[in-house]
View 1 (cartoon, rainbow, N blue to C red):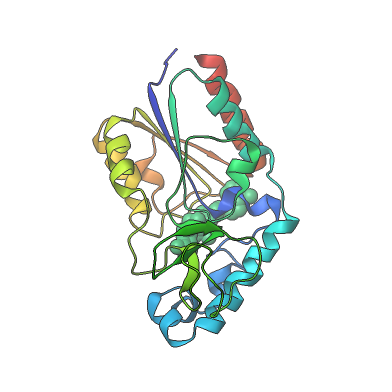
View 2 (cartoon, rainbow, N blue to C red):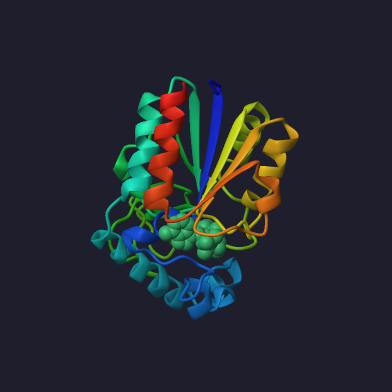
Length: 235
Ligand code: OAD
């Protein structure tokens, strides 16, 4: 059986759906209800910061009511039990992977439970509402705090590190992401070009389905624990 040396797992909103967090593009998804250009761009924040804060405050307060599900726990178990290196890259801004116990985790689109000062650049934990006049715990100045979220038009976090890991990976697993947002949407092609086996775990086939050599379709809470159990058994 194959022992993979370097596994990359990319997760998206679908892995947190059964925890009660909305996805973005499915029926009832966040970007079906809200105009992303008015809420998730640097321009939107510059022209109406209160509206942007209100949107992210609601999402941050929603995190208090949700818990990791069986798919998050399965990935934490893989991290603990598998002898190869595991890098978990998430596009999600919720804290459910870390709450489940995953360790080698890169939040490429930021984190709802952090805020950043655009003046002194400090990043700090933030669990309550954020306002235009919130004070930065780092420099003590008011008026410069923003959600620590990557908006459309901004460069995601950890990209250099991710590119290095993609070049080394021998198994790439994509879970619960529609593959609509770059650069994350391009990772599967990069991994395939570097010779990795590619696996899609999703509720349904995505537009990138033909880039995956293996695919399992169904609910994340069912197919992720099954796939992880097989990987652990195979090593
Ligand atoms: P999307 O909403 O685009 O896609 C969610 C994917 O999850 C779809 O392919 C669904 O089929 C799948 N899905 C839904 N429920 C599922 C379940 N129970 N089990 C398994 N799969 C399920 O979300 P993302 O691909 O994560 O960026 O979106 C990428 C980025 O777009 C987000 O990180 C966010 C958004 O704009 C920022 O906010 C910067």
